[in-house]
Length: 283
Image (cartoon, rainbow, N blue to C red; front, top):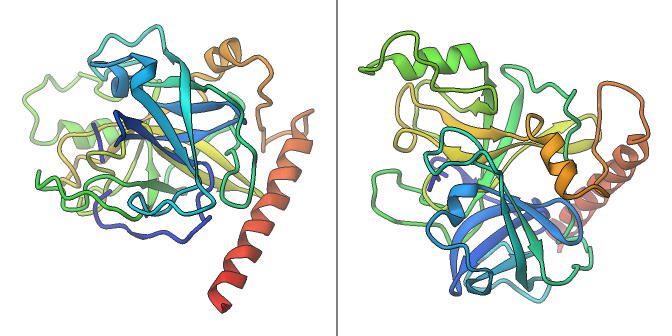
């Protein structure tokens, strides 16, 4: 499972779509709320155990040891890994998790927009990865009790492949980063997602909307030089997501479409979140 090194503490309600997927009561993976009943995570989070009764989802939390009165824990009714996933992190590392009951939205629990397949996340675009994963990056298993956040730039597929070939014994023509993946991070290392962050969001603000660009998937170590984080590319899997959740509205920021109302509504939500955070800081 992949993981956040070099990040900083988030504020309450700052990332209201972030969830903790718990296995037998312990934090196991991250995830992103996309409707009142569905969460996006990574297929490899369920590779060794996919029994729904063993899982639960914590929403609205900042601190795992003290989630607070605004948090909610819900059981899982269904886990739907992408059918192309074969257990090797090389493709299909995205899963949909259906909650046993719908959740009520609040200033701490709000879904993130799922981008339409036409949305493009360009190199050097700044996005954010969040999670409760390991913070040292040296296999010390020192996870964070407080939700961490880290701003990372998008890296082009060609550049990411070139970085992964440096110091690698694989043939030069090998494409480690496939079309269904998106890279983000730093060639210098030192800042990255890490163990325990798997399945969590790579969130990008575009206009007034926060869009789910990627799902934390894999990397070579944590925060290593020339080994940026690799995420499942959500736009690539938009048709599959639609096949599982046909009622889900997708967001396009490039063209005016029937989804524009969704974009506006989430813009207003973003303003509300900012106002709440400002008021909390003044208390």
